[in-house]
Length: 327
Ligand code: SF4
Ligand code: MG
Image (cartoon, rainbow, N blue to C red; front, side):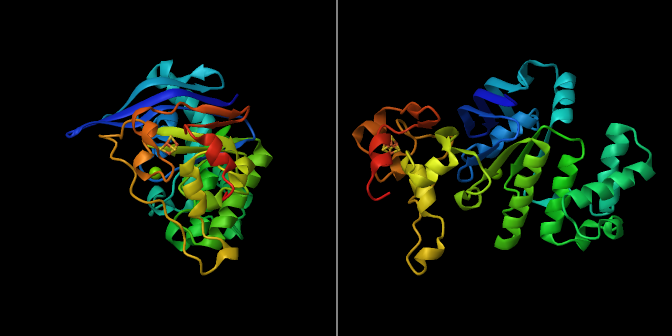
């Protein structure tokens, strides 16, 4: 297994108290596989990723427990410099906002080339050649002519491709993409998503795709983990989820995707807001918003029930949800 996250806990110390952002998350990704991690903002999906790549190592964020096994080695048990080495060589992250992640006063060729100069000890001339190769690889047209241009001279979609190129530079075995297409319009979104999926296949990398939009992952993900209030509430192969969710929250997310065949009908939205993480509701944390909630849901926290060998749901009533004829 490429990456195994086991019972991860992350908390933030704030003036108002301890925010439990991640409360016992476990998931895994193998080489050549895409896991989509889905949830509204504040569900803990980005924080989990930040803990994996190590950008949480600074306060106020604190890892409260768990394991992050990368190729079998627990990163959380390594000394800081060791950890940085393992991560630097093996994983890369792509963020939503390419414009603020790229340096505006350096050409894209300089920024891409820099990776090879610093980490591979290449000459500037060789590094530039590699930069052009990378731009080709992420299908930026006329790479050789554009390598000297600055980030603002590229469209949003092209800039996101440059971010992907930067992530690929050191040939990581795992890429974590946090809302990589959210800032782009729909057709460009699909192109960037397709590119990521294709590169993942070609290079046999693991890919974790973090998104709030169930609509963008259908064609690219192998499995989905749905997060709510810092926990995984459902995990399943992507097709199972689309066929019939086993958790009412997943059902709600699915019903909020705009569908071409239902033009004009009103779009469903899950009522209410995600909970304040300083004060997570008792029992099932989704109960204040759940159309299926019963008394037991307000007192008993559901464990992750095994729905099948490849599927889990943290709902006391997963059977009813799964077999709902309205599904
Ligand atoms: Fe809804 Fe209860 Fe299931 Fe939670 S356990 S998702 S409140 S039905
Ligand atoms: Mg986020």
